[in-house]
Picture 1 (cartoon, chains in turn cyan, brown):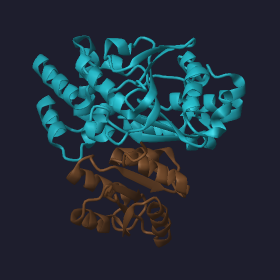
Picture 2 (cartoon, chains in turn green, purple):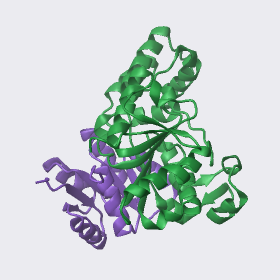
Picture 3 (tube, each protein chain N blue to C red):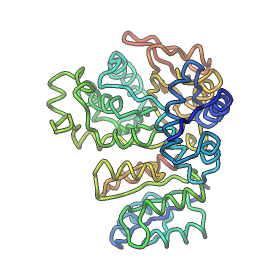
Length: 280
Length: 125
């Protein structure tokens, strides 16, 4: 096989295109990462080189190659109980505050975006079951979404490595998982508790349907976006949330640096951001 | 008045189509049925649907092929749910890759189906 090389111009064109379509900006320091995956896709599709591949990527009506490429380019590294102080904050501060404004039996909706392989959404479901006594009083719905189709199938399957579950308390692992050849399989009840959907946060037509959520978890995604995309994402989340709804970001991310739409809420367990209640 | 959303239910089993139709009509949607992918593509060409609920295993043209053909024409705009009795990881992955927004293991509970349809149609606000 001949050597496939990505020139500086190719990289710039690809970077610009990928950014426009996904909102994800690759810094020049990511060049090696991007080149390697691009070359893999050029070979996998039988393209003769970058130009050939890039033309196919742009004009293929089904978008199948775009999806395959996105799956390669996105990073999916997480585990159960990651940054667990936020889940504590959810059950001890956020949900009680939301519950106080709701009537019994009303829907309470949580959106995890990006879903990645599902650890976060399932951790939330476990926390609600184990740590939130008011769970039975509300019609709780957990939706977990991602742009990466491969990772969504993995999430829905709910099969995890030892590494992914090692932070879980032993009692929860025993209660909610079953040992299988490939690792630990999450129980059917939890798999039924989370709806996994494919969505591109950067495509307003797709995000438009996502409305009326009380809590959004968007952790460690905005760090991959540039300033303009971050602002756009913040505005999307503002529309996704009900007035008074909350958004939880990753520990290194701050909404205050992105947008002034949200109020900072300093709870004992974590700092989160809230869509103002006023103007209802 | 809010326009009634129109859903195309694609399944080769008449009982399943009836089951889905009943749930969706009770939830306030209009439903059209198709018994396989070929018939579904013909109906999709003749009307603007707001959502597709598609079975995987069907004669003539299965759900994957239908969805791929549909995405080739319409792009990813119209949400699609793929439904199957197979809970295997590989089926789920193929469904998402073919362009599904959600993968539903049959039989779906009525509330579960109505909920995901409502979500994808933006009616859960």
